Image (cartoon, rainbow, N blue to C red; front, side, top):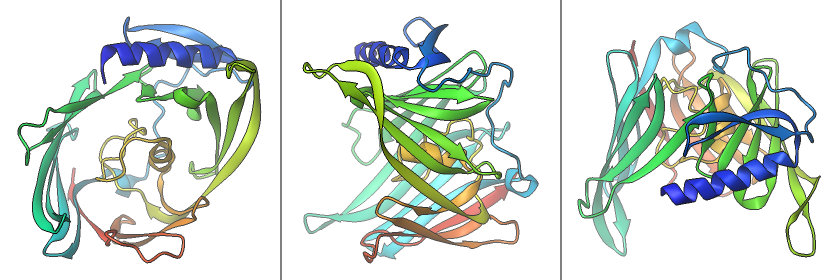
Length: 300
């Protein structure tokens, strides 16, 4: 994303958060210095005492890292991801290979994601299309506050309360959502609010509730890529970087139900409670090009 776009996004997001009142921390990526933004609508105080917003720990989960994720429909449509880690168990590279059908032709796909670190946090991910070397690489950037907490990626901005991420601001739509957690640390509800606009389609400073989205989980453990702090990104191909992935990646258990659609997931687990297969379905539609995902692991 180009610098000028980041500056524009940040300026708008700060103005949006100014409409909502308690103190929440944000950061200007062009300056690299923390600043304050009021956020009164939520009427909460931003927590600054917990340096790491990690989810609850499960010993068996944190002993194993994902080594590969793959799916296979047939010899013309499959994909495999291999994950590479350094000696500190940090994910440094994802290599994806496979085949797909486009306009009646079987094509090969090969790409890589490079994870770049600063002070132990991923600050950018560069995507290279190795099957088309002429295509320019794309880089996504991630920004943190002085406590190492993710506060911004893409068009999303994150707020914290009591050491836990509890609000997501959407720069492009003058909206935000508030997260609710269960006793296990899973996000079970997301309440959306949208800004009231004047006759010029500008925010008036008030917001109204629009909808709630609900989530359910199984007892199995979400796979570990050593990226729990980077909840705005899902390293499984096809998941990308959206608010939905933030909900999924914040929760320690495997997501089984999402109320919009609805969408459902089914899993098989190994003896450590980690998924070895994942089957996705949207509403009552039989999945097309959504075969079973298969996971393998390596011990740390």
